[in-house]
Amino acid sequence: MNDFGPLRLSVLDQSPIGEGRTPDDALHTTLELARLADSLGYHRYWLAEHHNSRSFAGTSPEVLAGPVLQHTSRVRVGTGGILLPRYHPDTVAEKMNLLRRLSPGRVDVGIARGGGPADDFDQKLLRLRQHLMDEGPADPPVPSTPAEPENGLWLLGAGGSTAPLAGRLGAGYAFGHFFSPRNGPASLAAYRRHLPDGRQPSPLLAVRVIAAEDPEKAAALAQAMLLWRARKDLGHDGPVPGLHTLAQHTWTSEERTQAALHRSAVLHGTPDQLHHRLTALAHAHQVSEIMINTVTAAPEHRMTSYKLLADAVLAPLAQVTVT
Image 1 (cartoon, one colour):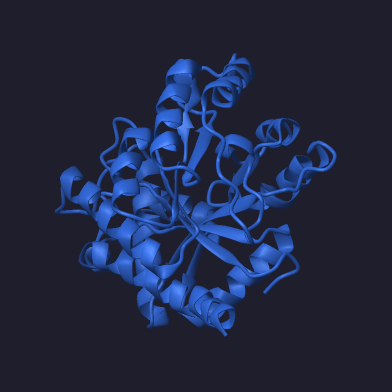
Image 2: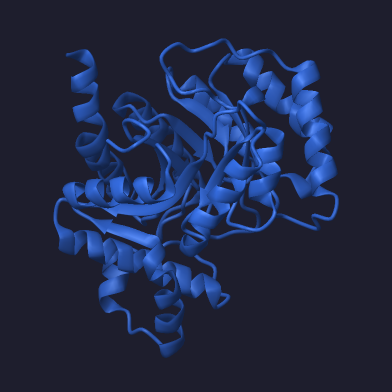
């Protein structure tokens, strides 16, 4: 528990490609993980957008959201996020409104500033928002849950001008903790300051997490993720390395330097350890929802991580609710 009530967990899935696996494998794993998250009580399942990547298979979150919605029955499904500078806002709105009609009350429209020149991002976003309002269905009210943003609209950011813009629009705001951990409190404060009077803030944190029953295994999986991230920073984009590759790898000084830059953004440990750390993180940022992003080479390690977190954080809450 925190000052904002029970901690909710959600999923940010980038459809990672592990070494020895294909993009097809990664996409099938996304559907499998979505079914698991739905059954475990995760609140949202967001799909990322990456292009020309050998690390991630998800290139079109609005397309992938369709089968994810079909393979689940309860979890909210969203784009995390559509890179709006690449597209015409009317096209984005039409696709998302279509999903909202097919799955009322379950679709989040997550929008990001990246992907290209963003000089006209604010104007594009306003047009998108207007189209969602004018042409889209009204989401049915869901009793006994925190209010969702109007039209399911969320902005994704890691600081800068996105947070106050989200506030002014009354949209949801998702802060990318794994991009810039230090900027979180200031960005969320800016979001809240700019919310219209009477609107309830609904921000969340997107955090990179790896859970395992053995803390040493969790640390090794986190180290493999950091090796992947370091290589990517140094221009060697490729599949996520597995534990066998990590054990045989000799780190260069450049890789160690890059990994050190990201180490504070990766939480790892046993479920109980992470429960305490995530609760403290939520309290420090005054949020009630954390979106978990887990990148591993082996799908089973990702599945296990999400299940362990759900068992530690969500299952006890479900028992209290039932009781």
